[in-house]
Image (tube, rainbow over all chains, first blue to last red; front, side, top):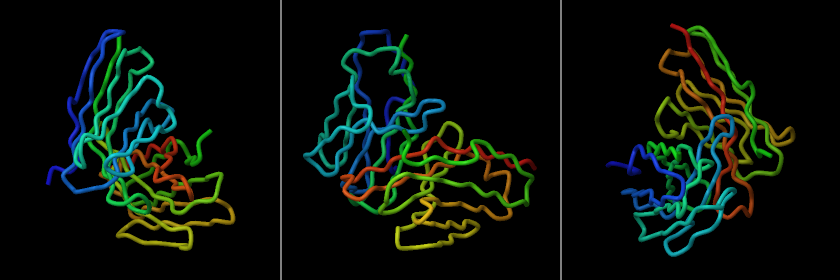
Length: 113
Length: 112
């Protein structure tokens, strides 16, 4: 099993460019999440999808959009990248809405110049 | 402000020693989870403790939860160089609609 797969692993964007971060899980999990990790800030939740067909804002949603394409895939889109979005982005999934562990991908390291 | 905050921010110990890391949180929780992150990798789940539990064990890990003090501790016994990583606590709040809030993490270095 691959678990949670994120693509790409690295990306450099210029300010104003757009891109989509892809995430797929093969564990038949219901809930999926996007976090960003910045030095000294820990992980902050951007968006999540508690079940297929639903998405909700997390702590830091501004500048991002998401799509739960199907049960396996949850993408994160930056419409107009800003230097403040330079970060490491992690996708995670879990089986149930509550009381189950998160399974993380290995992250996408994004730099916006 | 963070729901969960770990203490200390960094810890350096000798191989074979025990490592104790603490997490404090602000509001009532359903459960608290600990994760490990090796450099350049995603987080890996270590252990989950529910609000009605006081202690759990998993191999060399022991987690305690004190809901009256709103705190948890993670003990790693007989540490190994391979335990060098960052450790995060994450809390799940009642009615939080299925999301976990993470602390800023503790950097543990185990010297061979």
